[in-house]
Figure 1 (cartoon, helix red, strand yellow):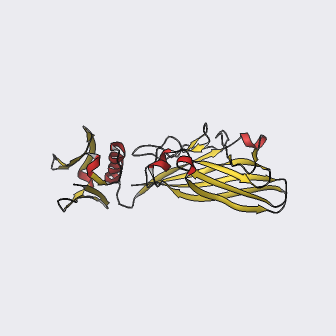
Figure 2 (cartoon, helix red, strand yellow):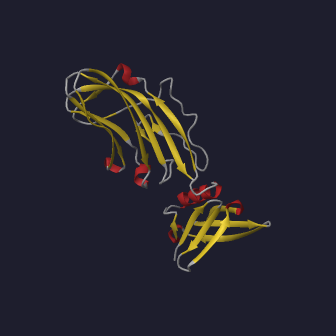
Figure 3 (tube, rainbow, N blue to C red):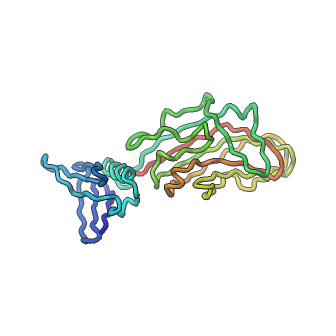
Length: 246
């Protein structure tokens, strides 16, 4: 026994995989709620409301969430979107002040890139709203990207802006974004960059990632820098764009 709920343009398709039944419903007539641990979808036509689905999460194969909250939120976003390929989103900019006066020491042991978010260019006024809103994308107290308000399947773009101060020639620098438990997902921002001369080098990298699992969503992600020779690093900040499905 299983049900699949598809977001198709202005309609919702409910597929009963065991009964081999498929029914289309107009989104404008639908509402979704939770009742006694079940997902309830109602259809209101001519001021008459009927239940078209009432199932526990275990009986719903698509969207592929086990939790009642995630299912309700995702189906609600389906109903309120105008297209199956609809997207919404927002952005934030976090500007650091601490590392300008006290640069981060970089060695062969990866060091966390910190950002206190206290700079004049910090802007969190345009974080994504709607559905379940997003309160932050960067945790200044733990120095990590906070994706916990996002859904699996959402996308994030990050623009990193730092300066590396090279004291010795031929210093090789790496910066990686570590996501998931134990940093199991590694996204390279700087890979084996060999600085042949000494001096201060501004580095701007733009990277797109996706929230591929609940582990990636719920685990703080961190940027870490390392080098084969000792150097230092100043964090200017990062711009983060979140793109939500539905």
